[in-house]
Amino acid sequence: MLENSRYELKFITYDVNYFLIRNWIRMSQHNFFKEYKDRIVNNIYFDSFNFKSFIDNIDGQSKRVKTRYRWYGKFEDEKSGNMEFKIKRNVFGYKKT
Image (cartoon, rainbow, N blue to C red; front, side, top):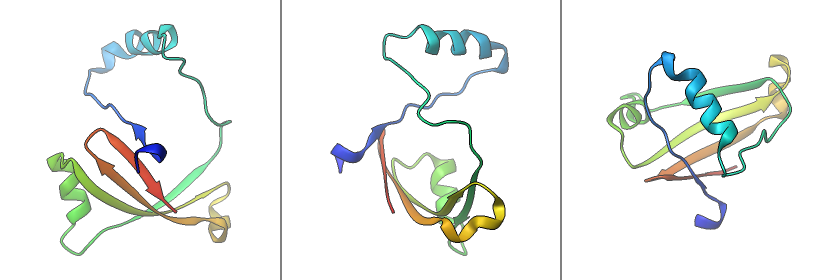
């Protein structure tokens, strides 16, 4: 699990801090870089009838799973997509396709 996971750190800020945060990322010693060229990303997320995935996210549950169908490019090209399970364990996240 951990060898395929990524460290995800999220925080809340105000829009007035946009340029400060953008410059902090650019000047960081952590070698941030753009992973992919610009592209269109399409997603369909699935949830239970009682909205368990949504509620777990809002509640900040440290262990949760999201199910989605994702494809890239034109909306009409949905047959080229994959079903994905995004798994979150504390600050580590990974997905199974």
